[in-house]
Length: 266
Ligand code: ARG
Image (cartoon, rainbow, N blue to C red; front, side, top):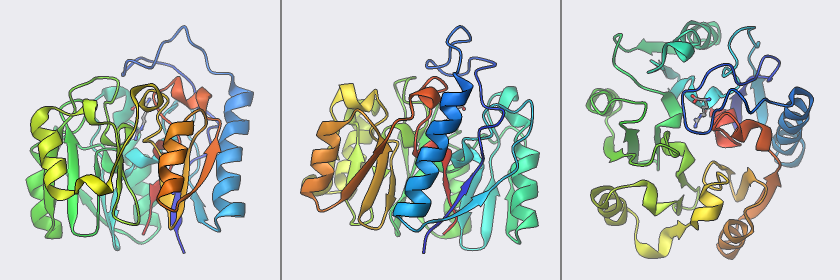
C-alpha cells in the first residue's frame, strides 16, 4: 500500500518568480487549479488505492501544495528541506511540524545547506541520484549518503527550466528510468548510462519534457502523469505500465506537475 503526503491548493497561486515557469502576470485560475488537484487525488485514491495524508494548507504559502519539496522520507526518518529561496523557506517549519506530529525522526540540515527534498533526491532501492546547482547544494549529498548508507550520484541540472531533478528524471518500479537527457551535461548523462543500461532508459522527447512528462508518479505498474504527453504514454505502455494522464496546467504556471504535488511516505 502506497502512502503519499499532499496539501490542498487552497492558497496556491503565483506570488513571486523563482523559476522560469513562474510569471506574476500569468495568474492562476484558482477554481480550475482546485478541480485539477482533486482530479489528481481521485486517480490516486479511487483508481490506485493510494492512502493520502493531507497537510493543512497555510495562507501566504502559495507553494506548500508542492509537498515533494517537504523533505525526503527514508523509513521512519524524515530529512526536512532547506529551501534556497527565502520565499519558500517559510514552509520549512510547517513541513517539520507535520513530520514530527506524525512520529518521524526528523533530521534538520544546517542553515545554508540547501536541499529541496524529493524534488532533488530520487532513485532506485540501492542507488540514489541527487540533482544540484539550481536548488539543492551538491554538498548535502555526501552527508545524506553517509547517514543512509546509500550511494548518491550527483547530477548537475544545466537547464533552468528543469530546476528540480523530478522535472526531468523519474525512476520506475521495474528499474526503468523515464528521463529527459538534455537536462544533464555529458558527465551526468554518462553517470546515468553507467547505472541504468540503455534498454531500461526511456527517453522523453523535448516537447513532452516541457509538458513535464517526467514529473510522473509511479505506483506499482501504474504511472500518473500530466496530460498532453502521448509519446511518453506509449513508451510506458510498451513496458507494461498503465498510464493515467491528468490535466495539471494550472500547476505548470508555477513550474510543477503530478510528482511535485506528492511526497512518497514509504
Ligand atoms: N513554484 C515551486 C518552486 O519553484 C514549484 C515546485 C515544484 N516542485 C518540484 N518538486 N519540482 O519551488
